[in-house]
Amino acid sequence: MDFQLTEEQRLIQGTARRIARERISPRAAEIDETEEYPHDVFEAFREVGLLGLTLPQEYGGSGAGTLALALAVEEVAKYCCSSGLMLLLSALPTHPILFGGSERQKQAWLPGSARGETKGAFCLTEPNAGSDATALESRAVRDGDDYVLNGEKVFISGGTVADFVIVFAKTDRDDGARGISGFIVPTDSAGFSIARTDRKMGVRGVPTANIVFENVRLPRELLLGEEEGHGFNHAMLTLNSLRPVVGARGVGLAEGAMTYALEYARERQAFGKPIAELQAIQFMFADMAIGIEAARLLVYQGAWLVDQGKHQREHAALLSIAKTFATEMAVKVSSDALQVMGAQGYMMDHPLERHYRDARQLMIVEGTSQIQRIVIARALLERELVYP
Ligand SMILES: Cc1cc2nc3c(=O)[nH]c(=O)nc-3n(C[C@H](O)[C@H](O)[C@H](O)COP(=O)(O)OP(=O)(O)OC[C@H]3O[C@@H](n4cnc5c(N)ncnc54)[C@H](O)[C@@H]3O)c2cc1C
Image (cartoon, rainbow, N blue to C red; front, top):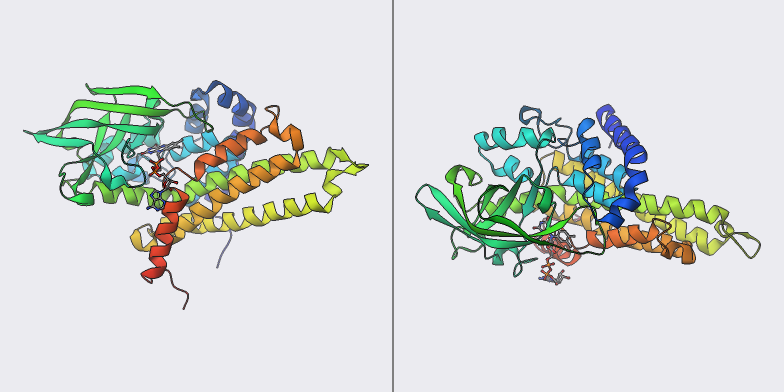
């Protein structure tokens, strides 16, 4: 077992660390307060080539892989979880094309994303279909050579800045998951509109949009892949492949929160000495480090599995474990780090309250903690996850 990163991975980690310290950290509080998408951060990622890490070189990416993306996200999320999501969003709308698109679609849509010329968003959730994605009601009906798409998608990260969105809709209302197809929808299509954006607790730098599709006419070449009915599978493969990367947002966030609180604890005096000398506080930090290290290993292992092509249903449990453990750890560590700082931790003069608000998003997005546990329990019961 080799725990060493490759030279390429170390380079990407170092580049992301530099961008995070120099260009993201000074902006993080402002990004949260203004709730404005930070185009300058996207530009920084574009300049250093961090937007195509998971895309193969033949489609304009670097082919560095999911572990490389996880490493970059971890660095960035130490200071700004919104910026970590921006990096993840380089993959969330491109992976359905990578896993399910035709060769022509890959050539047409992936290089622009990899180079940072276009942005995408991933539209699965609907007002009446969240965890139970098969209940979605959006409908794409054949009309000659075209499809006509109607429906509403909610909580879409980056929807307001996207050039294209991947939309999952029913092409056959009666066939459950197999009735769902994916579509590539340019956001300048007639009938595409943003109904509103959400006011939310955290991760405020990436707007969350409610999108309406009203008689959007799509040529057949925008159906993802060659045939109808594979959309649900493409959506699940995409989500599986990125579970470790959501986990990496949690690992980075926790590292940032703990490090900040530790520096504070070294200085803050109580009862005649720095609080860092109190064993109760030391044990809190030790527990934070235990959580971070365990989560980091799970996340790296999960990302490595995805890089081995193991993100299908039978491998899903380890990816779900990584996501669940790392995101719940991030909530606990950011809460404990805030506690260490007392009243100061609660104030917006410090980043801890923001880290805590941001962490809460991670247990909900891309499959809640409860849905991950369903996946893990199923794998145990179906003997996919065994300890012989
Ligand atoms: C900030 C943010 C950004 C998002 N970005 C996107 C995006 O870009 N694209 C997108 O498509 N979606 C996005 N989402 C939506 C997200 O994926 C959903 O919120 C998530 O899948 C859960 O769906 P829901 O909120 O409808 O909860 P529901 O499905 O209504 O669930 C409510 C509660 O019930 C629990 N629950 C549901 N079913 C079960 C079950 N069978 N067993 C046990 N418990 C269960 C859930 O865990 C949850 O606690 C985003 C959400 C947020 C908050």
